[in-house]
Image (cartoon, rainbow, N blue to C red; front, top):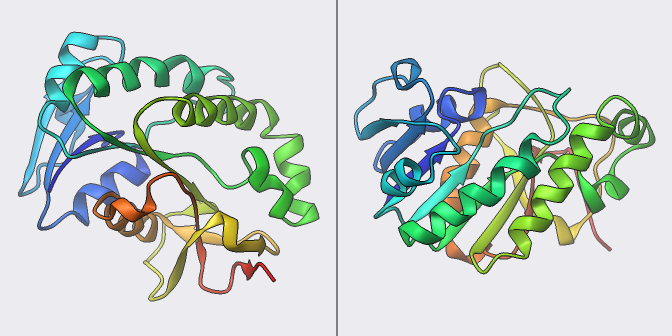
Amino acid sequence: MKIALLGATGNIGSHTLRAAAGHQIVAYARRPEAVEGLPGVSVTGGELDDMTDLSQALAGADVLIVAITGPVKDRTFASRTLPGILDAAKTAGVARVVYVSAFGVGESAGKASAFARLIYRTVLRGFFTDKATAEAQLAASDLAWTIVLPVNLKAAAEHPEWATVDLASVRAVPGLPTLPFGNVARSLLQIASDPSWTGKRVLLTTAKGWKPAR
């Protein structure tokens, strides 16, 4: 499978590259020299707002993983950049987009603990509102989409077990679970390889970091 990746120099993207054995990865990056050189990975340099370069880089990909994020203080980054990315994907003929958002964005906040909701509504309010707008932009497109919602993330050894679950089947996410970047990367590749996740919002959390809907 040929996977196009945006965000290859970030925490999630770089771990995705390292976990992508067996896939052909095309990484499009503003600083191509910063992308780790790995077997099966090709790198194209360019800016997100250069539709010609971006469309050419995406051409031939089976699926696009969007794992880019702006600084928390930038409250328009996601909704400002995603429409152009989606247009480029359409021009390139990429039918599927896997978009990395965050648990706590939009309706998912209703499944969070009281402590987590407090953080989402204060410290992360503007950042999450922007991501909610971007999620709506993707859902309104005519592309096959999956929205991925990781819980709090950290740099640590991968957990041997974790949960990749349709948000619709989740009743609650207690506490403030934290998942290593490597686990998210493995789930992203599995989701990208499996079209049955199309049209779903997917929670990524620890093995015990969720409760099923009754």
